[in-house]
Amino acid sequence: MSPAIKYNLEQLHRMVGQRLVMSPWFDLPIGLQWRDSKYRRLFHAGKSLHVGHNVHIDREHKQYTGSISIGSKVFISHDVLLDYTGHLTIGNEVWILQGTHILTHEHDITVLRQTGVNPTTQTSLVIEDKAYIGSNVTILPSCHRIGREAVIAAGAVVTHDVPDYTLVAGVPAKPVKTLPHD
Image 1: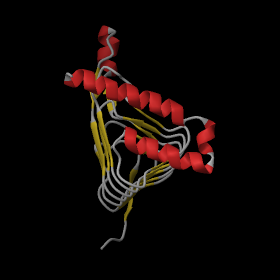
Image 2 (image 1 turned 90 degrees about the vertical axis):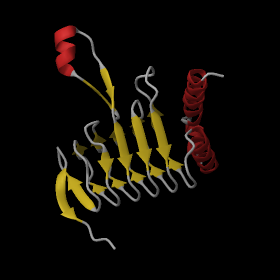
Image 3 (image 1 turned 180 degrees about the horizontal axis):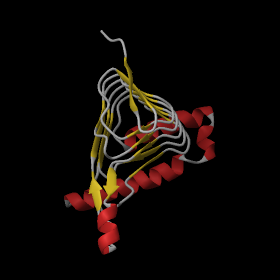
């Protein structure tokens, strides 16, 4: 089987699997365990993955062969969008709270206005181990790295890389302080 066909079959399996586990029945305690286990298999994630209700892990532009990698002990709360049109790597022990949107592609508005064509550019984002992403955060494609044990305050819009052990907040997110570490 060609790599393109194999990739497309995997994406179809992911799409159908996610639709199945988004049912409210999987909000019951026994369903939560099954949902987590299904997401672990669909996305080849590490152990102890928790995925809340109404989480969309998807490529917004299906013609691109993006990739996603999810580590162990990752907590993804409800109403989260993880776009892997580009490339998304989530480390171990990462927390992503409700309402967060993470994007790995961008559009060039200048080209759109001049030509009417809306080109998509894939980007990459690495979220290092033990990062904590608060509620209703937006991480834009211009950010390529969230550092180890970094904290992103609720409601922040992240437009640039976040260093290790740094708390960022605001719109756009700016460093607030360096966090203690070993």
